[in-house]
Length: 195
Image (cartoon, rainbow, N blue to C red; front, side):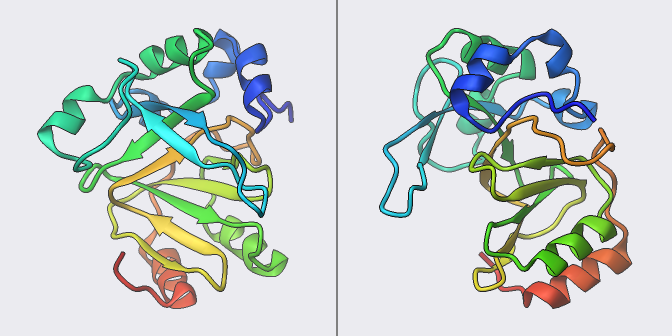
């Protein structure tokens, strides 16, 4: 399987083209929920903060999902134009409550057997995170955000910005509806608490 992009921002800018843009699921591309981001200085652990921006160049602040926020979010093509301009480090997706979009964020500290089981139970569009050490599994489902920091797994279902890399980890190129049985298993695994 050919990898479209790496998780490093300069490669994202240098290598991005129209054919690579085709890898993203239409389920996400057709929604006006896109943002851009700029990377900050790495912290003591080497993790770089991601600062979200609207395509206008204004930093995203205030209430996520408000009427003003929704009006400022851009289309996929507008986000691509922004990153190609060289003014931003990458593109990202704004998860909004009630949109039917969720993302499972598997961090670097998640045990390998747990990671493998989650990927198996949720056969959907999956890509590496920006750090290159985690995974993002995109789902067609409404849910609340819940997490277990000790396990290294979080499910984003509301008011969350997720950086996109296009570094695909499965052959599946669409966001699949998560079945209830798999989702109950995940909730029990993570020991959910409202975010």
